[in-house]
Image (tube, rainbow, N blue to C red; front, side, top):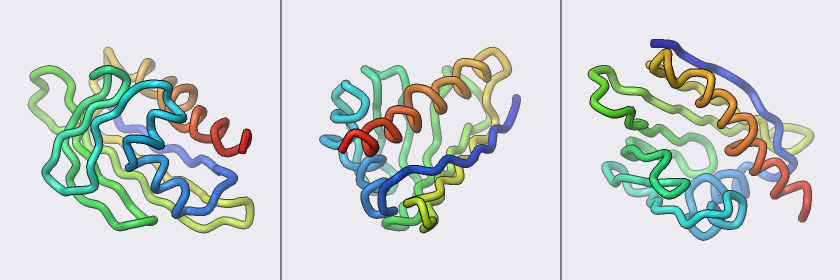
Length: 127
C-alpha cells in the first residue's frame, strides 16, 4: 500500500473548484461522463462509468472533501482528502490519498494528473 500527496493550482475560485468536484452536472462537463455524486455524508458516488467509486465521508463547503475510494475487497480503506485554499492564481488544491494498492498506484497517480485535476484545470482555462 502506498500514499500519494500532490498540490495543484487551478485558475478558478475555491467555490468554483468545489462545485466542479461535487456537482454531478459540472463533473459531467469536465469529465465527459455522467456522475453520481452528492454532498450528503454517507452516500456513495461513481465517476467514469464506475471506474471510480466509493463513499462520501465529510464535506466542508468550498474547503474540504473526504471520501473513501473502493478497490475490490481491500481490507484497509483508501481515503481521499481534497483541501481547497485561496491562492493569488485562483485555488491551490491539496490532494492526499492513503492506502493505494501497489498494483494500482501508477494508474491512480496518472489519473489524478491527467483525467481528474488535469481535466478540471483545462475546463477552467477554456472558460
